[in-house]
Image 1 (tube, rainbow, N blue to C red):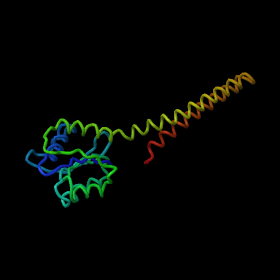
Image 2: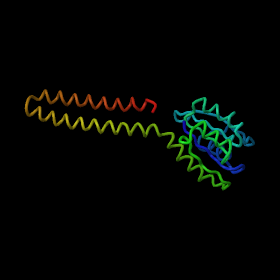
Image 3: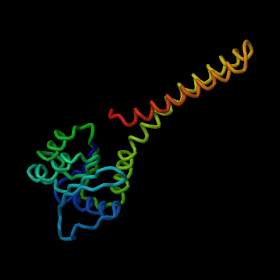
Image 4: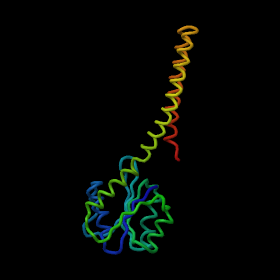
Length: 192
C-alpha cells in the first residue's frame, strides 16, 4: 500500500487540489462543489485507489482514512496538516517508507502539484510492472548464458558425435529458457 499525502497548514489548498485531481486526472466529478471534504475508493487500471481529503484532525482521519486501508487500497491519496496528530496517524498506519509527501504552502500553482502527483502516482501504479521486467531481464540473462553454453556444447557434440545429439541439447536449452521465463512470471505474481 502506497500513500501520496498532500500536507500543509490549514487553508493551503490540500482538499482543493485533491478534488481537482479527482475531477481532472481520474475524470470523476461526483463531489458537489460546495462539499469541502470527502472520502471514496474506486478501481483504476486494475488497482484500488482510495482518496480522502479529511486531513485537519486525527478523529476525522481515523473515521475516513481507516476504511481505505481496511479495503486494501493499493494507492491512497490523502491530506494532512504539516505536523501534529494527523501526520503521526498517517505515518503510524502506513509506515514512512510507503508515503510520499507533496507540500501545499498556500501557493496555488496547481499545475506544478498535479504534475508532481502524476509522476509519483504513475511510479506507484507501474512499480510491479517494472519489477517484473527487472526479474525477467535477470532470468533472460541466465537463460542466455545457458543457451550459449549449450550451443557451444552442441557444436562440440556435433563435431564429435551426431547431429541428433546437437539438436537434443538445443531443445533442452530452449526448455531451460522457458523455465527461466516461467520462473520470472511466478516471481512477479508472488508478493515481495
